[in-house]
Amino acid sequence: MRYSVSHQKLQMLLSAQGLSSGDAAGIDKLFGGADGYYWYGTLRDMCPPGKTLIWEDQYAMVKAIQAHENATAAEDEMPAQVPCAAHIAAISKLLGNPL
Image 1: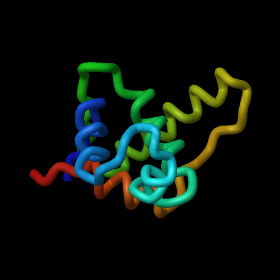
Image 2: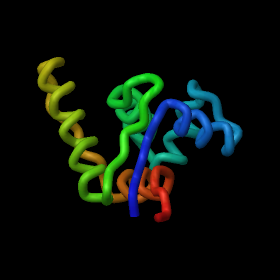
Image 3: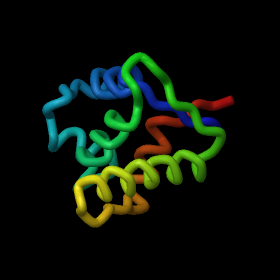
């Protein structure tokens, strides 16, 4: 399965659930529980406006998300966070594109 993310796709996902981009509790739940809002923000930050990022498989998607997190954490001189299994499952479900 391929996976993709764009600002438009993220907005459509929120709209489909009746959420706004400021609804931290709702986004937490949608993106896998506590810290889900953090990973939603990470996805928004890593995707250039007007562009779509596409990955061939879940492994590549998770690797790209973690690489972005590692780079931004290093810039901020903070330890990088790691998405838990629930975050990865939720993100995979939301960003998956059946072939």
